[in-house]
Amino acid sequence: MRATWDIFCSVVDNYGDIGVTWRLARQLVAEHGLAVRLWVDDLGAFVRLCPQADAQAPRQIQQGVEICLWRADWQVVESADVVIEAFACELPAAYIEAMAKRKRKVLWLNLEYLSAEDWVEGCHGLPSLQSNGLSKFFFFPGFTAGSGGLLRERELLTQRRAFQADEGMRLTFLRGLGVEPVAGARLISLFAYENQALAGWLEVLANGGQKAQLLVPEGRVLSSLQAWLGGAALQVGDTVQRGQLHVQVLPFVQQDQYDRLLWSCDFNAVRGEDSFVRAQWAGRPLLWHIYQQADDAHLEKLDAFLKLYKEGLSADAQVALTGLWHAWNTGGAMAQSWNQLLQSWPEQQAHAETWCLQRGSQADLAAALVQFYLNWL
Ligand code: TRH
Image (tube, rainbow, N blue to C red; front, side, top):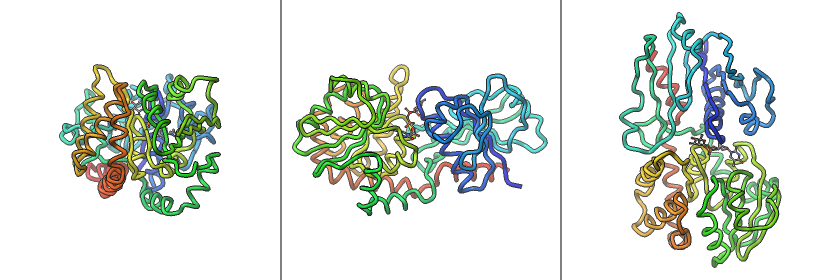
């Protein structure tokens, strides 16, 4: 009998929680043949990622995954063989009871947030004994072999390479989004939170030596873009030009389409967790707007990633990258480090591909979870 998996997702804010769990659930079904239920407490957020879904349905099947509304008034259900609480969300007490009572033992995992910090390897896979006698294991995604790895579908890098090698495919895709590439322009995607550093970057792009075409999916950064541009509120489909800079507002697309957008661009500004990983799989230079935490804890996470990512870059390229990422995440001045980055552009491009290939040679997160379960049995 195939193993059953329950994934619990509480949507805190934004799309990272549901983005990660939806991607994981689909992969467990498609590549590992598992029976997966995804419990989500905010179907509205889910519908944004999966527009064909029904925001009212308590249960529905989408791409082989059973999507279940996680209601506050929990109705007792039998627990699965493997239970994942994503990002330390709190499971319903009655469900935990059902796990403890189940004849066949249950693997209980807490899937943590992604971090490149050193301590991750030491904590990955550790059990914690709960008061009801069950053990909960901490599963840490990460960038190194000693971590739980990164979400990466089996054919992703092959598909990405085929797409990038075929200019026709790229053009068809972009035109499908209503984007007509501007001749000679550097194509940039922008997905970020509200960001004070944006104005400085837009300024340097507008006054740059090369044209830049900025594609901005609908979302929080539009308010910062709007502030710089002035004028009427931005809408999907709007295009604006300032000097060398051409800006276009795109719709929020499905995850697979967003991947293709990242693959199509020369440079990707991404945020949070999932888009950050997807930009790495695009094999193109990137800029990360990290999710802000109390006491600036996120800046340590940012530096931990930079420390790993910078390995193998020349000193100048490292300085440019660090300067740019710090400015972006602290509301600093972007112009100098952007211009420095342009000076090391071919190196940054080659490095992004190398980084992607290195990470791509490690086990992916879904496979690592399945292996963890098999070892535990
Ligand atoms: O939305 P986010 O800011 O999510 C964040 C982070 O995960 C953060 O760590 C977490 O603490 C917080 O949520 C609660 O960024 P992220 O992780 O990139 O998730 C966005 C998802 O949206 C991702 O799966 C990609 C997807 N996406 C689309 O499907 N279409 C689009 O057009 C765009 C721009 C994104």
